[in-house]
Image 1 (cartoon, rainbow over the protein chains, first blue to last red):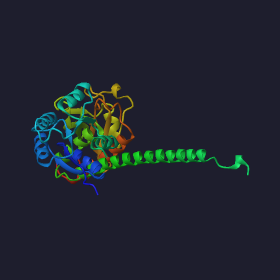
Image 2 (cartoon, rainbow over the protein chains, first blue to last red):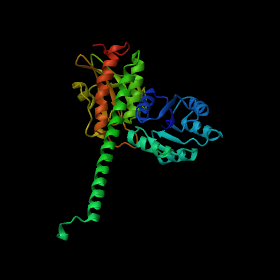
Image 3 (cartoon, rainbow over the protein chains, first blue to last red):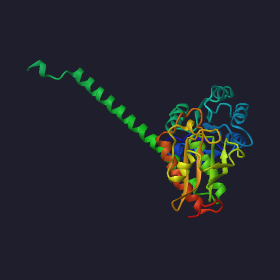
Length: 124
Length: 195
């Protein structure tokens, strides 16, 4: 039996966190949550998840700031990150990739699309 | 033995492969439908759990905003209380709209008047044709107690990547209308919510 992959979900919306838990948790992933960017950086450093799902607009530290902080650390720079964006504008998407994200999903999050991207990155 | 009646082994294998391929495509299609449904159920469960966990009107309204933003895809919206007599709609909370500009909405404005007249989710056919304070209305979600509308969740523009509401969104908005009304009726702080 394989060890379940761990996904860190960072979002300041408890509704969004719960929805991600329900979508990903029911498909065998182990979920960690963070309520803002700073908490996400601390949790990722401590737990080294297999993947991070990062909201953009969060208090204390935005998603983009958190991504840059994670990419600056040796121990976390290789963790793949999917950005969860509200605005599907080219500039925002470009910022996602230039910050070091592997992929992005738009809000409102479509469950099958999210699952497909997660599986693709995690290789299962 | 007539050679024409003997099954061609190659053709037989080809037929089996074709059948297996069709079965696989059918199974994948069913799995995708099931995953979509699981995603929708996850949304509804998350929404109802959060709505009913609020201890006061502010917490419930915050959850309403999160649901509209994260699950529907609308970041220009307002929650309004219906003040009677009048009636007039007064701003309670919102996202992406100026609270001062939307401090009140006359109940006579279309499509607000239609939304107040019937306690069901209203989606105007032509949002641009009847803007409220200059913003097109995508949907009006009534908050209802005892058959009377005591509040409205008004959705203005949807996020860029979402051209219109779909059937899943309408299901979610009806769900939101029902559960937000009940949640607000259970907690203090929202005018007219207690049935």
